Image 1: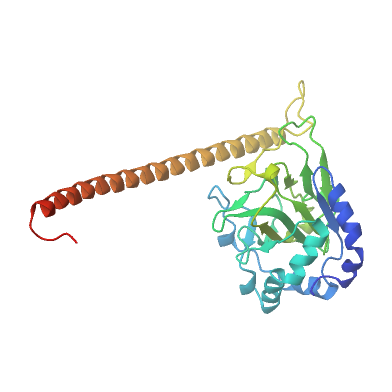
Image 2: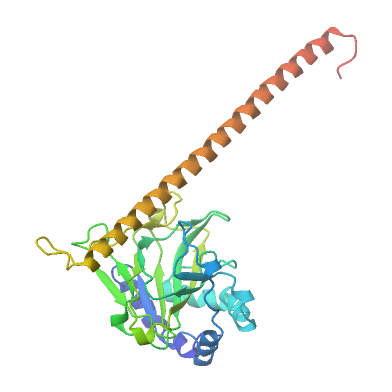
Length: 317
C-alpha cells in the first residue's frame, strides 16, 4: 500500500468526518501517503508544460495538467496502477461509504495539476458523467504536494454552499499543505474552487502542486441523478472592498476588467458549445432522414419485386 499505514486505524473517524462535512460531505486527511512515497512524488513531479496549459476556452493559462501519470516516471506508473487496485478503492469506499468505486485509468481531467502565481479557479461543479462509459462521477480525491504554503498566499481549496448567492454563501477553506488529501463527493451542489495565488516576490518560483483523482460508479442514488452536463462555473463576485462611494484605484479598475473579460469569455465559450451541439444535432437529424428515405425507397423496391414474383410462374418457396 502506498497509503500511510496509520490511516487504516482511523477509518471510522474519517468516515464520521466525511459524513458530517460542511457545506457538503468531505474529509481532510493529513499524511495520506507514506512519507517516502509523498517525497518521491514531489521530487518527480513533472515540470510545467505550456502545451498542457490550454484552458477549456482554448487560451493559454497558468495551470498545467498532466493526465498520463504512467509516462511521468516509474514511480508515477506504480501510483497509477495502485489507484486502480482493489486495495485502494476498497479503502476509499470504507472512508466514504460509497461502494463499487471505479478508477478512471485515463485520469481524464485529473493527474498532476500545477498552478502558477496569479492563477485561480472559480467555484464550479464538475461534469457528472463520463460519457465514454456512462459512469457516474462520485468522488474527487486531491493530494497536495506543497512543502511551503501560507494562507496569505491564496490558493486555498474552497468548498462553497452556494456561490450563486454570495451574501449567503458559506465557505470552508483548506490549505493545500504537503501530503494533505481532501476527499469530497461530487454532485449538483459540490461547489469548489481556489482563491487567487498571490506569492510574495521572493517565493514566486513556487507553484501550487497537486494530484487529482476522480472516482466513479456504474449507478448512483436516484435522488442524485441529473441530465449529463459539463463543468458549470460561477464567477467570483466583486471584491468586498469595492463598495458604493469608494473611489476606484487603478488596481480596482483592472480587477473589474479582468472579471468582466472572464465572464464574457465564458459566455462566448458556452455560446460556441451550443452552436457546436446544434450543428451536431442537425447532422444527426439529416442522417436519420436519409436513412428513413433510403429505407422507404428500398421498401418500395421490395414491394414491386414481390408483385413481379407473384405474377411470375417461378415458385416463391
